[in-house]
Length: 281
Image (cartoon, rainbow, N blue to C red; front, top):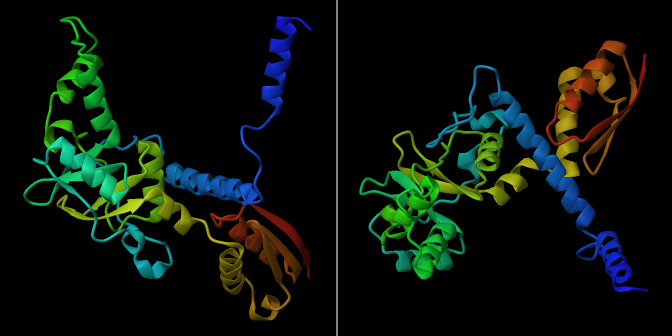
């Protein structure tokens, strides 16, 4: 076998081999991600109309319904208190605080506790990289390169931060916050009141855990739909099983009730598929 054949064989082997071994939890992890993406897509669809534009920073997602409606809100899952930086904090102290808090970014607040920007590890790394390179953009250098260079000369949070900040209101729904996090590529979003003062923070991992219910939670929601859709005499005939987000409905109900119940079940954000085994009375 010549060198070219060796190279081709190695390439094919790499293509056919997974980069890491399959773990028993891999299927559940992928299923959760798919379900989370479905919820985010649904939230995005509510905001994406012909007359609506993607949010521009700073963003405060609109307040959602009252907590009693059963819709999870940001205020129910946010971290309180939230870590923050003063705008005059030196960059070396910023690095220490990020490490201490085990986060990749922190909001910057002014003297009135209003969020004025966010400093991330990327901002600090960019500063160090520019300083270490010694490169200076020329007079006709690209605008982005010049901005990066000018920003890297800063020494405090106010100089290095990305501003304005993407924020969310406590009354926003968790689905709205998840959509905003996906759109902005943020792992953590500051939560502010209507005056822009910091009141908390919410992470993408918490949003995922809140949005994706387990099978028992989905079954309980389907049971609620059955009680609202079916007549008292029909409720006892309907059986529900849920496995990995797939709902199976069986029993005997009137045709109109069957169609409405299936539609109501399909509308539940966490449901991947509905297997309709219902027969008509």
